[in-house]
Amino acid sequence: MLWPPLPERPPCPAPGTSDAVRHRGQREPCGHCVGCCTGGDKPPVLAASAMHLLPLLILLALCWPAHVSGYRGTCGLRPMAALPGTSHVVGGTDAQPGAWPWIVSIQDPWRRGTGHICGGSLISPQWVLTAAHCFIKHITMWRVVIGATQLTQLGPEAQVRNIKWLLVHEHYSSTSERNDIALLELDQPVQCGYSIQLACVPDTLLRVSELTTCYISGWGSTMARSEGSTDILQEAKVHLINVNLCNSSRWYGGAIHPHNLCAGYPQGGIDTCQGDSGGPLVCKDNNADYFWLVGVTSWGRGCARPKQPGVYTSTQHFYDWILEWMGLSPAVTTTPTSRPVFPSTPFQRPRLTPTESGRFSSCPFLLQKLVEFFTWLQELLQNLRREKA
Image (tube, rainbow, N blue to C red; front, top):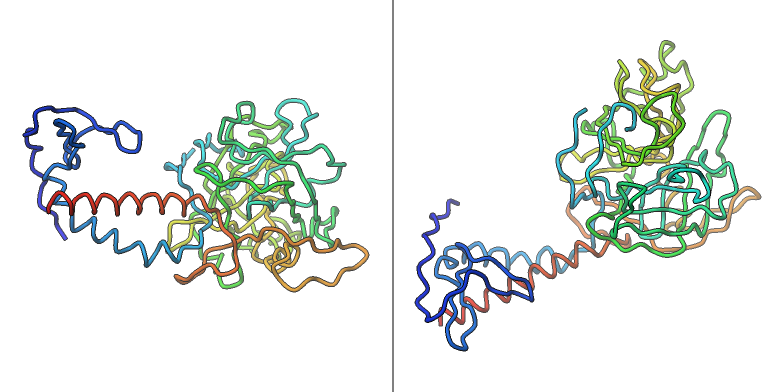
């Protein structure tokens, strides 16, 4: 539908005029949609030009019961994301604040520099998914930083948590890097916001191999021979590489397991590196504007070498394992090498069809913003009705 052009705002007929009004304590500039006409003890009124938007406002208001009241939260969203860079992850660019709001930095405060050890992904307000090989040392004093982009200047949006539980996969092998996956339970849930959102863990219904827009991110080394971490989060676009090709004799020669993914470029040049371990490999959904956490950074030979792309643990392969140890499925049978289940706040994922997210939890932040918007919209419509009457 085409809307008629808005007319110029007419001069205020009231005795007094103002260039701005206050709405909910905020000073709002006047323009086409809001005319600031004041006079006597009357409140500011909407200019006639706002009436041209009335059909659209009514349509938005009607969306409230259909979409917001049944809303249960989402994951994989990037409220602050701008277009990513094209050119440290090796070969990457500085990420903008909030670009990857589920990434976390796992740190040893006693380590020199930023203390960064590994990355991870927030999959519920109290659970982080990361790599098992990150935890070869005692972690009593380690901490998790969420919502940060620059590690030396965390900023007011960042949150810090201690580790309550560490669960390394019971069949993890440090020699072959099989089952290189781990869960961290935080001592307290984090509060979601523009810079903190949940990652989406895919189940078996998602065709991961068909996803074409994928990214890696982390604070790891930007050079293959460097052991330090970067201060500012790095990001880079990568492609998923066919596992059979990746496992061929001229590539990794049989070292790739069925639960692995390969991502990067055949010619090399862009890759995860030391310090990126445990961090996310995410791919944009082909039909919607959110990202799937498809991989956990695991290992590679060197960094950014030709025919030696980054190797990732497939989160889809371990979907049931994640559910079980987070207490969302029937409890696993414990063995001498496994830890009892400690139920906690569940994580959630988007459905492949429009439906409520059921028993999966969510970040309430976006729901709160939607509620505020539609509440304001309903108040605006009520004011329009009064003015028209």
